[in-house]
Amino acid sequence: MQGLATSLVLGVSLAVVACAPIPVEREVEASSGELAQRSSQVPNPDTLLDRALQRTQIQDWEGAIANLQGAADGFAEQGDETRQAMAEAIVRYFDWWLGWTERQRQLAEPEMMPDWISFGRCLADETGHICGYSLQFVQSEDDGIEGVLLLQNHLEDVPMAAGGSYAVFGILAAEAVSPPLQAGESWVPSCERLDGESPPMMAIVQTRGYEDSDEYPEIREVWWANLEEKSLESEMSPGNIRCFNPCPGGC
Image (cartoon, rainbow, N blue to C red):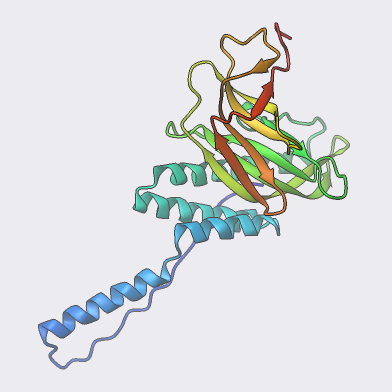
C-alpha cells in the first residue's frame, strides 16, 4: 500500500469574451459566475479522501495517493490542520507500503515493519478468518496529531521470496488520533465493555502508576470497529470499559 504519487490535474476551460464593449456591472457578473463554476469543479477534500479509500479496494495505490495529496491540500486551504495531517500520514503509510511489498517479493529475508506502523490488532470476519479485518495505527510526523487509526479489510495474500506470504489490506475508514500522547499514556490493544458483549477494542490509557495493576482505570479514549457499517467508533473517557495490563509487574 504505497508508491509514487501521480499528479492530479484539474482542467479548467476559459471563456472567450466577445470584442464588443461590456458594461462594468456585466463584467463583474461574468467573473463571479466563472469563479463559481471553477469552484464547483474542484472536489471537496472529504470527497477526495473517500475516493482514496475506495481506490484501495482495487489496489490502486498510486491513484489513492494522488487523491490523498489533493485532500491534504484542500484541508490545508480550509485551515483544517488535523485532517490535513491525517491525509499526509496515510500517504506516508502508502509510500512505505509500496516499497516494502516490492522488497518482500525479492528479498531472501523478511523485513520487519518500522515502529511507527507496527501497532495494531486483527479482527475476525464473518467467515472466521482471524484477520479478515484489522485495526492499524499509523503514527504521524506532524506534531498536531498522534497519528491515524485505520479500519482495514483483507484483500489477498501475496507470496514472499523468503517463503510464506504477506496480507494485503484495503482501507474502509480512517480517524485522526488527537491530541498526541501525553506523559505516561500508552496504547493498549485489549479492552472490553463491562455491560455485555463487546467488540475488540483499542484504547489510549494512563499507564504511569498502574504498572503492577491488572487493569488500567484511566482511559482517555477507546476505539472499535463497526463491521456492519464498515466504520470506526470511539468514546472519550468511558466509564463502562476496562483495559487490561498485559504484563502486571513487568514482562
